[in-house]
Image 1: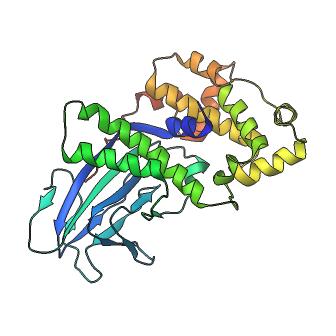
Image 2: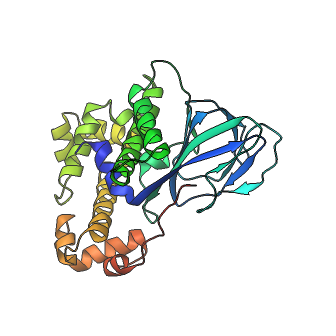
Length: 304
């Protein structure tokens, strides 16, 4: 897989959730922080997002708001409306009334809680992608398909909606990276730097290999100093530090999603000794690999 797809697959857990939310003015709704990422798409009407310590964000029809770390926030139909609801599972999707109608698709993704990834760590708390003619057509298409499946479920919707939510997450990130233009920094710049991308591909493709900076720089076609500088500037840490991070993320995914024996997991991420692997894993996650595998999975994220 490509770097972005692999990264999302490594940090995504559980099943995404989504739902259609309709209210008539006046209304105000609180969204507590969720253990993952979340988003809103305005299908009809307009509203304001109020974030603690931040400026209000105006959303119009077609706008998308993405919260990479599930930040808590309020949404109101207009500035000054009181908060009368708290988002929670099982509440009515639509409350009728005489005021202006606002419809949103709200969704949330579970992400690994104990070990993050710099791709998401460096993103702002709120990413606003306004609806603009001709911009991000793939994102717009995914939004339309998702909204249609949620508004009028048909046979196969239970399979289509999670797949569309995962596609939407990728398109959200693509759109954000595209918005950065030619002056991309951080992970937005990874995909435009062939040397860094080559080194990342090598690490992702073979985390079990004992990579060295000279090997990675030779593969990338640049000097060791150049690779180290550009890799650190975009990825957020030196190549071998990222290798350790990716090994641990890969191990965690194998422990969650497979029954591979611990010795096998250790070998797949570059450790010939199960003891050395367990020590490194516990240092990163705070749990031994066996404890991590047995640990109760976080509750499913339900979008409301």
